[in-house]
Image 1 (spheres, rainbow, N blue to C red):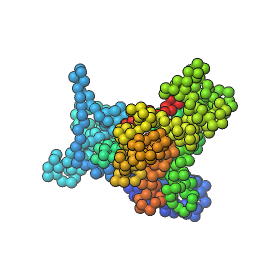
Image 2: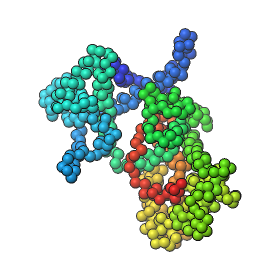
Image 3: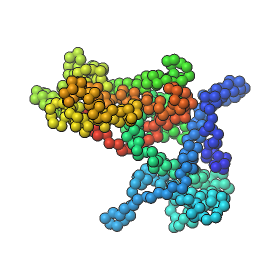
Image 4: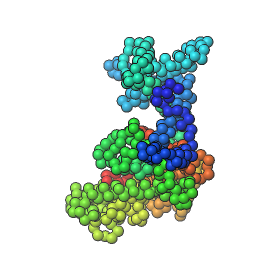
Length: 511
């Protein structure tokens, strides 16, 4: 470990434990009292950025190493299967194409004592190092046997030590570091807590995906969307003022971003900590900005005459006058669309201005009563199996309760969540053992949640995860200790599978 630190391939461990609030104050004080020659050479902002970048890297590296250390002793089975030609193929998540690096570096060491009986601590360490080195070698080329791979790897390391400029050798040392990262990757996949909390974790993940915490991330996502790019946040995109927040390796410096955003969120009151309401206001504003951006973009696409509003024919030009006259109310038909369009057209002008278009495009986030009533009717159609226009208890259990329960469990605790019978009785105000469209309204935000709904729950998620001392407020130190949950879209894959049964029937998915 010390050799890796000395070579600059690994950050010193003490940087992962630095109190950043006090350290930044001390750094600023020392800079202000420094000789003017130093100030002429480097700006304080550059010094701060470099310091925070190193601290963030140290926290990440040593977190991964701690995970890898706790992983010792586990054994794993990589499944394989035969195709119809008799060829052997590996299967499982590690064998997706993008997992090639992780798979090539993973070492599955069983208990070393089983292989090296009566070995000294030095011999055990040597055995472990050889296995890691052998695995790393296969990342670069093929070998006939493990011994050849180990010899080649050791030759490269020796070459790197003898010739400081040997980039190939330096890559070999880096490969050893990456091996730790690959092992920790498996720890996260196979953590026993992952699966029984699948629904709540997926719920939390949806909050992060729906509501970006950082407006810079939102801007970058918009840039990617405009460019049609699928790149991850591992490069410096062409967005205004973005470059200064990226490290040399192209990774967004989330530590620096949190330091900058903290005083912007802490404003009611400005007391050096962020309360739940301050955080909710901030995240809600990000959600509102996201909705308005989408609406503005949609208007720019469809506003053919440039009047700042959208007519029915501008938005849905494929519908003919005959289609409109027929007024077919099937899902996606002209009459179905026209009803929603008229609900949004509050001033009955025949076209939708910005606010009306915003309601039309995002009905689940609308305050328009006609739109919400329409949304309730549409939701009831998907629940009402016997077509009587109402929801009975069996239909509630089949189509609605589990969705509601997933959010209710998160709101309080599973022990406080009402049973299906209790919740149904609460909704059934007139006690006719049926829930009509109006009685369904309190459940609508659960069954068809929008961005603003997610903003509220994302706030609760962040407070719950980052508030270490459970005092109801977040300090900068607490946010920095949990920076990954504020930037989870940077760390998580977008292709994680989740059964969004209700989302498949989104009422405006054709937009």
